[in-house]
Length: 399
Image (tube, rainbow, N blue to C red):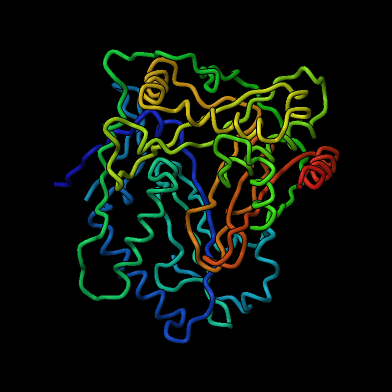
């Protein structure tokens, strides 16, 4: 008889039912040729699948509660005749990278939640480097828990025997369950009630995409310009710079109000804090709003302060209120656009998302070069005329 268990998903997990596809490039290492790496990763995956058994589950709808749950019960890569240098500029997202990812199956109900293109052989290059394609449903992990999973995976790759994980996963999603009864104690303009029009779908706009780089020195200059701000961190100044440039590139009335969303990790903001090893999504959308005229005229330090104040709003009670709001309204984040940062997550030779075009999402991820590089790359997708304006403003506002 097959033992089946269902895993509760929080209201944050519920709205993140989509796959995140990434490609991670690693340089050659004479001690670890690709075939050895593949064998070790396969062995490591088998070992971590014990504590991470929910990765082998499938997403189901509980018809009694109307909630998504993970139901648990008890491909080979391909060699490529290229070196990493020959496949082109890794910084520029390449549609050919789609070949390095395992794609969706024909039947929705058979969709795996997590796929590594590493079962018998990782995709390898003649230089000895290799690429690891990973597709995970966002309900499994947020960025921090995915990073911990990869660290746990790596810890099992060097020994044949299983050894205890340094950070055993905590998969109790009820730690972020709504209160009973729900208590929405704040207005939440950053959230929108779920009420999609039936039978209406808008065609995606024709967008260009570009990668904009901010070097460590340029980020330092942004911090210096914002030195009067309360907290001129790298993230705050980069977010403020993107928000100002993207908002003003759209044109329109100077009285138009722009709302930018950005992810805030709530693990340490809750009382008590979540365990460091919490596997679920412990991220909520902070927001800040301003008129276009203010973004154009206010000192940069004030724009940075607005970003900081939006994140500081996210204390325990505000986070609990947002989770409870989701229990009542089944909604999703609502803003002009969202800034999603992968800046501090993973550092092989290079990691990047697979190409996609979303005007309402801006991605920040590390520049190529590994741990010694502290600049960022910024992926922006916009209509051609807005892209020209954005690029002009991006350089204009750099000190």
